[in-house]
Length: 196
Image (cartoon, rainbow, N blue to C red; front, side):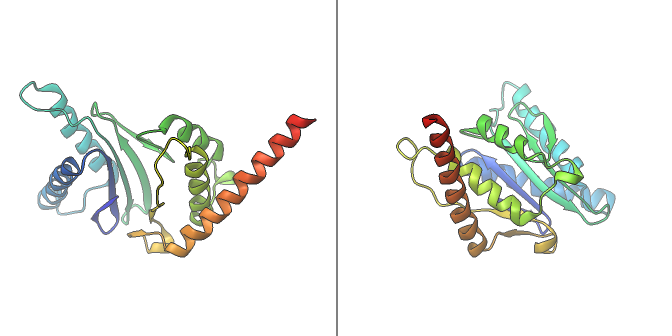
Protein backbone atom coordinates (compact mmCIF):
# COMPACT_ATOMS: atom_id res chain seq x y z
CA UNK A 1 0.00 0.00 0.00
CA UNK A 2 1.45 3.35 -1.01
CA UNK A 3 0.29 6.89 -0.57
CA UNK A 4 -0.03 8.72 -3.87
CA UNK A 5 -1.32 11.96 -2.33
CA UNK A 6 -2.64 12.81 1.14
CA UNK A 7 -6.11 11.43 0.39
CA UNK A 8 -5.27 8.87 -2.32
CA UNK A 9 -3.61 5.51 -1.75
CA UNK A 10 -2.78 2.69 -4.11
CA UNK A 11 -1.97 -0.98 -3.74
CA UNK A 12 -0.51 -3.17 -6.46
CA UNK A 13 -0.43 -6.93 -6.61
CA UNK A 14 2.90 -7.29 -8.43
CA UNK A 15 6.68 -7.19 -8.16
CA UNK A 16 8.18 -4.16 -6.42
CA UNK A 17 9.86 -2.72 -9.53
CA UNK A 18 6.50 -2.63 -11.34
CA UNK A 19 4.93 -1.08 -8.27
CA UNK A 20 7.31 1.90 -8.28
CA UNK A 21 7.07 2.24 -12.08
CA UNK A 22 3.27 2.46 -12.04
CA UNK A 23 3.34 4.80 -9.03
CA UNK A 24 5.63 7.20 -10.90
CA UNK A 25 3.26 7.23 -13.86
CA UNK A 26 0.23 7.73 -11.60
CA UNK A 27 1.96 10.68 -9.94
CA UNK A 28 2.65 12.14 -13.38
CA UNK A 29 -1.04 11.66 -14.30
CA UNK A 30 -2.05 13.38 -11.06
CA UNK A 31 0.09 16.46 -11.73
CA UNK A 32 -0.76 16.58 -15.44
CA UNK A 33 -4.45 16.78 -14.51
CA UNK A 34 -3.67 19.44 -11.89
CA UNK A 35 -1.73 21.53 -14.43
CA UNK A 36 -4.36 21.11 -17.15
CA UNK A 37 -7.53 21.68 -15.12
CA UNK A 38 -6.31 23.56 -12.05
CA UNK A 39 -7.93 21.10 -9.66
CA UNK A 40 -7.11 17.74 -8.10
CA UNK A 41 -8.05 14.70 -10.14
CA UNK A 42 -11.36 13.12 -9.04
CA UNK A 43 -11.13 9.54 -7.78
CA UNK A 44 -13.17 8.07 -10.60
CA UNK A 45 -11.10 9.83 -13.25
CA UNK A 46 -7.84 8.65 -11.65
CA UNK A 47 -9.03 5.03 -11.74
CA UNK A 48 -10.19 5.41 -15.35
CA UNK A 49 -6.87 6.97 -16.42
CA UNK A 50 -4.93 4.15 -14.77
CA UNK A 51 -7.19 1.63 -16.52
CA UNK A 52 -6.58 3.30 -19.90
CA UNK A 53 -2.84 3.35 -19.24
CA UNK A 54 -2.76 -0.36 -18.39
CA UNK A 55 -5.01 -1.17 -21.34
CA UNK A 56 -2.61 0.66 -23.68
CA UNK A 57 0.23 -1.58 -22.53
CA UNK A 58 -1.97 -4.64 -23.10
CA UNK A 59 -2.84 -3.66 -26.68
CA UNK A 60 0.54 -2.90 -28.20
CA UNK A 61 2.94 -5.69 -29.08
CA UNK A 62 6.03 -3.58 -28.47
CA UNK A 63 5.03 -2.93 -24.84
CA UNK A 64 4.99 -5.51 -22.08
CA UNK A 65 1.60 -5.79 -20.32
CA UNK A 66 1.75 -5.12 -16.59
CA UNK A 67 -0.26 -8.17 -15.60
CA UNK A 68 -1.09 -6.59 -12.25
CA UNK A 69 -4.20 -5.68 -10.35
CA UNK A 70 -4.29 -2.26 -8.75
CA UNK A 71 -6.51 -0.98 -5.96
CA UNK A 72 -7.07 2.78 -5.70
CA UNK A 73 -8.70 4.07 -2.52
CA UNK A 74 -9.43 7.76 -2.28
CA UNK A 75 -11.49 10.54 -0.79
CA UNK A 76 -12.59 13.56 -2.81
CA UNK A 77 -12.78 16.57 -0.45
CA UNK A 78 -14.79 18.62 -2.97
CA UNK A 79 -17.62 16.11 -3.39
CA UNK A 80 -17.07 14.58 0.09
CA UNK A 81 -17.20 11.09 -1.41
CA UNK A 82 -14.88 8.14 -0.97
CA UNK A 83 -14.23 5.45 -3.52
CA UNK A 84 -12.47 2.14 -3.95
CA UNK A 85 -11.60 1.05 -7.45
CA UNK A 86 -9.86 -2.03 -8.72
CA UNK A 87 -8.12 -1.90 -12.07
CA UNK A 88 -7.81 -5.35 -13.60
CA UNK A 89 -4.71 -6.45 -15.56
CA UNK A 90 -6.69 -6.06 -18.81
CA UNK A 91 -7.25 -2.37 -18.07
CA UNK A 92 -10.86 -2.50 -16.90
CA UNK A 93 -11.76 -0.50 -13.78
CA UNK A 94 -14.59 -1.36 -11.39
CA UNK A 95 -15.81 0.52 -8.33
CA UNK A 96 -16.40 -1.54 -5.18
CA UNK A 97 -17.47 -1.21 -1.57
CA UNK A 98 -14.93 -3.92 -0.75
CA UNK A 99 -12.74 -6.07 -2.98
CA UNK A 100 -9.83 -8.49 -2.91
CA UNK A 101 -7.00 -9.29 -5.30
CA UNK A 102 -4.19 -11.80 -5.45
CA UNK A 103 -4.03 -15.27 -3.96
CA UNK A 104 -7.26 -16.32 -2.26
CA UNK A 105 -9.24 -13.45 -3.76
CA UNK A 106 -12.38 -15.45 -4.57
CA UNK A 107 -13.13 -16.75 -1.05
CA UNK A 108 -12.16 -13.33 0.33
CA UNK A 109 -14.66 -11.65 -2.01
CA UNK A 110 -17.33 -14.09 -0.87
CA UNK A 111 -16.65 -13.19 2.77
CA UNK A 112 -16.70 -9.47 1.93
CA UNK A 113 -20.07 -9.87 0.22
CA UNK A 114 -21.45 -11.45 3.41
CA UNK A 115 -20.73 -8.19 5.24
CA UNK A 116 -23.32 -6.41 3.06
CA UNK A 117 -21.80 -2.95 3.62
CA UNK A 118 -23.42 -1.22 0.65
CA UNK A 119 -26.74 -0.75 2.45
CA UNK A 120 -26.98 2.12 4.95
CA UNK A 121 -28.83 0.00 7.52
CA UNK A 122 -26.17 -2.73 7.51
CA UNK A 123 -23.05 -0.60 7.02
CA UNK A 124 -20.24 -0.88 9.56
CA UNK A 125 -17.82 1.68 10.94
CA UNK A 126 -14.10 1.58 10.15
CA UNK A 127 -13.10 -0.05 13.44
CA UNK A 128 -15.56 -2.88 12.84
CA UNK A 129 -14.25 -3.07 9.28
CA UNK A 130 -10.70 -3.57 10.59
CA UNK A 131 -11.96 -6.44 12.77
CA UNK A 132 -13.87 -8.06 9.93
CA UNK A 133 -10.92 -7.80 7.53
CA UNK A 134 -8.62 -9.37 10.13
CA UNK A 135 -11.14 -12.19 10.56
CA UNK A 136 -11.36 -12.79 6.80
CA UNK A 137 -7.59 -12.87 6.35
CA UNK A 138 -7.04 -15.22 9.30
CA UNK A 139 -9.97 -17.40 8.24
CA UNK A 140 -8.49 -17.93 4.77
CA UNK A 141 -4.88 -18.37 5.91
CA UNK A 142 -3.89 -22.02 5.97
CA UNK A 143 -1.23 -22.51 8.63
CA UNK A 144 0.35 -25.62 7.09
CA UNK A 145 0.44 -24.37 3.50
CA UNK A 146 0.88 -20.61 3.71
CA UNK A 147 3.83 -18.67 5.06
CA UNK A 148 3.51 -16.81 8.37
CA UNK A 149 2.49 -13.19 7.90
CA UNK A 150 2.21 -9.90 9.71
CA UNK A 151 -1.05 -8.06 9.16
CA UNK A 152 -0.71 -4.44 8.05
CA UNK A 153 -3.62 -2.16 7.21
CA UNK A 154 -4.14 1.41 6.16
CA UNK A 155 -7.23 3.52 5.76
CA UNK A 156 -8.67 6.72 4.33
CA UNK A 157 -11.48 7.68 6.69
CA UNK A 158 -12.85 10.33 9.02
CA UNK A 159 -10.74 8.96 11.86
CA UNK A 160 -7.57 9.65 9.84
CA UNK A 161 -8.88 13.09 8.80
CA UNK A 162 -9.55 11.67 5.30
CA UNK A 163 -5.85 11.10 4.72
CA UNK A 164 -4.14 7.84 3.88
CA UNK A 165 -2.57 6.59 7.11
CA UNK A 166 -1.66 3.27 8.62
CA UNK A 167 -4.14 1.78 11.04
CA UNK A 168 -2.66 2.10 14.55
CA UNK A 169 -0.92 -1.09 15.70
CA UNK A 170 -3.06 -1.41 18.84
CA UNK A 171 -6.25 -1.48 16.69
CA UNK A 172 -4.75 -4.17 14.51
CA UNK A 173 -3.59 -6.21 17.52
CA UNK A 174 -7.05 -5.95 19.09
CA UNK A 175 -8.69 -6.90 15.76
CA UNK A 176 -6.43 -9.95 15.31
CA UNK A 177 -7.20 -11.18 18.84
CA UNK A 178 -10.92 -10.72 18.22
CA UNK A 179 -10.69 -12.46 14.83
CA UNK A 180 -8.87 -15.51 16.19
CA UNK A 181 -11.34 -15.80 19.06
CA UNK A 182 -14.32 -15.47 16.68
CA UNK A 183 -12.92 -18.14 14.34
CA UNK A 184 -12.32 -20.53 17.28
CA UNK A 185 -15.88 -20.02 18.53
CA UNK A 186 -17.26 -20.61 15.04
CA UNK A 187 -15.24 -23.83 14.66
CA UNK A 188 -16.38 -25.07 18.11
CA UNK A 189 -19.99 -24.37 17.18
CA UNK A 190 -19.62 -26.29 13.91
CA UNK A 191 -17.97 -29.27 15.64
CA UNK A 192 -20.77 -29.34 18.26
CA UNK A 193 -23.35 -29.41 15.45
CA UNK A 194 -21.50 -32.26 13.72
CA UNK A 195 -21.51 -34.34 16.92
CA UNK A 196 -25.29 -33.98 17.27
